Length: 376
Image 1 (tube, rainbow, N blue to C red):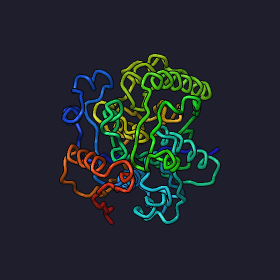
Image 2: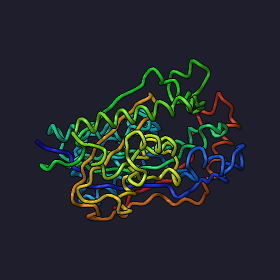
Image 3: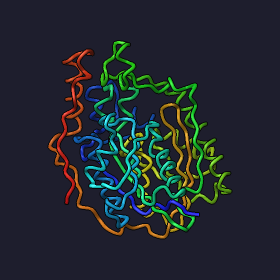
Image 4: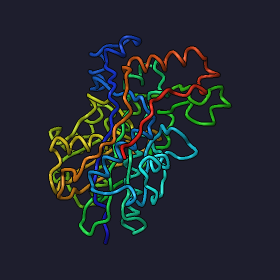
């Protein structure tokens, strides 16, 4: 039986950092208030489109695996903040990479989009439909953020990461997973304005209003990830003491600590990025995975647990077996376009445009981005 080994990995984080102190310049908040409730100190704000971040992360993942873009059979783009709906965003990555032989599809399950994409691509590799697949987790949330809403604007950031899956006879990659959804609670995390249905409700596309029931989301997230983890481990015949590292969705430090406690995994085995990057939605798990590798926390043959939850409310947990290699085969010269603006300047620009044009026109205001070109 074929398996889908993870052989390449890469990340792309925009350089502009938005600190808690920056947020306090226009919100009634402070570093202490945000840190004590979320575990976050800063997050990144992108000056380029999501597709550009995804392409740079993907080029780095390809180089890490020692593959050419033309070797790819499939690109899976996981995100809930795509640059466009039609055409899909995966096709935009295909163009930038020159991956002319690859199929391309988008997956949106909010914060779990990368993990659901990992399941879909792994199944295709195991079934023989494809041999080499690229799975991306990317979010560009800043242009859609309601920056005046303290409950959500302190939480989210932009970023991207990607992995390469390759067919292998060794039992590597996703050993087992559980996917689920608390659909009865889908209204607890809703972004009004990111969909066509809101045009009939007086909310233009892009003019977002966020519904965010923090207490209910916390309760469902902890319960959902704990239950999904229990079922995924049982499916693999693995116990928690056999887990070498947990790389969870980085939504909130309190949530992560609660899930680890319920799963019986000590925090010393949990890899965290939430303090530095906040919640990057679909990008949090793959970025954390790449940084765990860079930090030497992923050992050859390691068994990794990756639980997540997102809007919907989707939940999941994946058990992954790592291979022998934990260092890149090669490096890519791909870089984002230069940026001269601070994160606070970009956020204030978004706030000013929303305020100046009013609710009926905000959806027509496209964010201003620099142009990224991948190195030949």
